[in-house]
Image 1 (cartoon, rainbow, N blue to C red):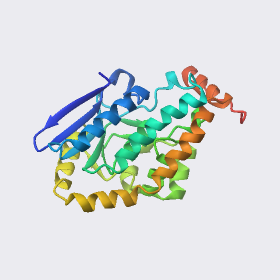
Image 2: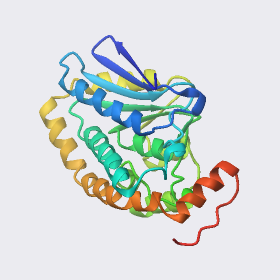
Image 3: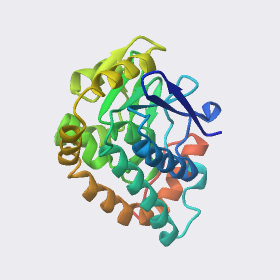
Length: 253
């Protein structure tokens, strides 16, 4: 199964991306399943907090590049409606939602991690945007969630440079909230989620709503533009270069 669920004492639900051989890509079926899981967790009175992580030593390598560019613009917009639903739920989640990042959080995996209100990373974690390398813009709400954490200027540099960010740098810049020893990110995330579960729920919800106000605009922006870019010649070149492990040659079309 691409997603594994574990219920722990104290009402903790641990959601694990579970395709470790491929470093847990976040393709359309995974996004659909996450919407269902999050929706159920919101309603379940026995769930007091949620931790999101990835199996096999990595959080997520990003979107499933195999099925990109194979849909029409209209079909892509339908898919991005699912992204909008998923990320919208995450940034406004009414219970503590903490991501535990081990290894890589790249591309859409980076965006998925940044949609969580609290980020825990292991000391060996690495982050990279990577979107412009394949001819597209950031999605998963990253155009709003990243500058909310590090500021607009630094967010732009991270996105445009595609530079790899170490865990230490991520902590110093505010990209992550806490560092754990290797293999201990989930345990620390669970402890922080349980601690936050003691906070009064109504103020938490109103605070989440306020911080999420810019994310809606970013999600709609990417829903309109990303399908066009995914069907562009530059994106096709970016995908080819990715699979052939070479530098892409973009032409602006």
